Image (cartoon, rainbow, N blue to C red; front, side, top):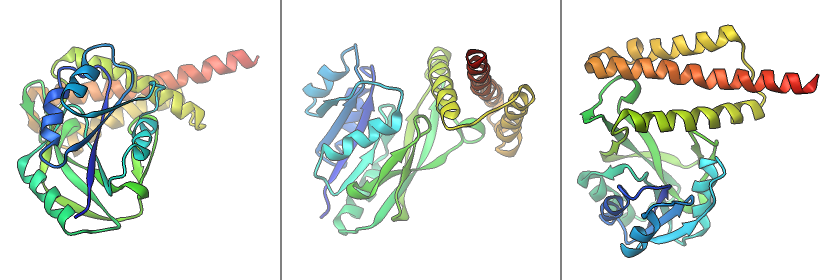
Length: 255
């Protein structure tokens, strides 16, 4: 039977940490917490619940946080779980069956359903998606500072069931992520050579709204669907506005 470590990234997650550790224990006894410098009770609670805690100072790079965990365990497979996600019992059982088959060169994806503002979403911005989360430890690396993605050449299998993603309990939580993610995205995009224009800023934002509200049927989620699609418009708008601001700032400094 293959061994498994579950990796959880944290940063001031005291409201989630105990529940996510207990939830992860459905699948394995090895829980790794990669903490980015929490100032609340996250670390203390994690240690009290027998998780292994490792500290890595936050530098704005989500992929680096995930890669940091890979040499902190000798497990055959690693499964990444966010602090606000929960593995459903059907998925936990399928994970254990997978590990018992001693498979190699296989990565697994899981369906994820968003629960936000007290509602379950089925369309639009927060529509159910599939996320690659379980990998042979020595065959995966993560890239991208924000909206990071795994690079792994193994064949993909789907696990049964799904993850519940308890995101955005209120609009203040959405706003905090909005500010953090748009800034990280703009800085990374500028450094990679991406450029934009005033017209392109509006075009990207409008296209983002159309995709989420019409093509992904966000209108079917009622007023909350409309609100989240409108917010996606402003999220995309702000990403590109911050990129444009960086461009113009650097041009002035070069003069």
